[in-house]
View 1 (cartoon, one colour):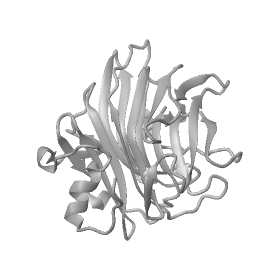
View 2 (cartoon, rainbow, N blue to C red):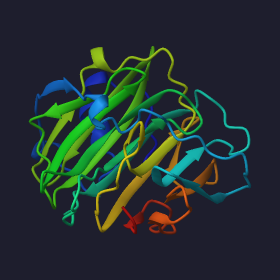
View 3 (cartoon, rainbow, N blue to C red):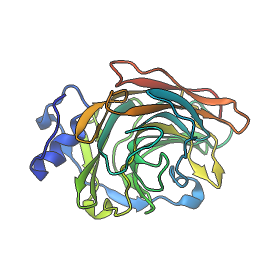
View 4 (cartoon, one colour):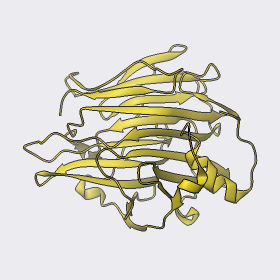
Length: 282
């Protein structure tokens, strides 16, 4: 993929969201408008109330770490001493999973974004997959923490759909957040009036499957296996895969408070762009 330099805003809005897809014809995709409603944190639907804080045990290259609510990969300039205001782009693609039935309510989010890995700001978007009242509920959302997260009402999110998402820093504290349904050939761009953050650190890029947090980590939906692909980022104006030699990455395994594995992350594949997360424990 070619490096992306300064382009006209219209081209950025249309082309950047699709950069993670290997094959794309812009004429085949249609931009749609959706209604936005705040996600109510007291109901446990906010996937990022408490950002993950990594341990201070680091080494060069792709390291292994654990979290009680994240599974996937995070990338920073340097694991021991990450540099802020370096990440300007992150993107990835996944397929909406079919959940297995649960006797209780369970929750899961799949997303890409910046920050939250050792910082108190997040700029992220993705999809949520919850088992509520005996059935699966799928929604799309975005969040610019510490602002409230928003549900993207009307955006199609169905089992088996291919989803791509990207976060782009445009400058002047404004981010371009875009989610694309490759199956339905539509995409949504969050209005920039919702995506301005003067506190954003832009310290990390992430590709994550998460157990949402509401006073405690909520039960994790039985999603089977989630495959994330075309995972790329731009740091210091250099674009690359998760394992780019220009930065360092952390492979995160989700565990319970008693160290049982909840969601296992695979090694990287496809030159560092692909990986899988496998459900193990609610």
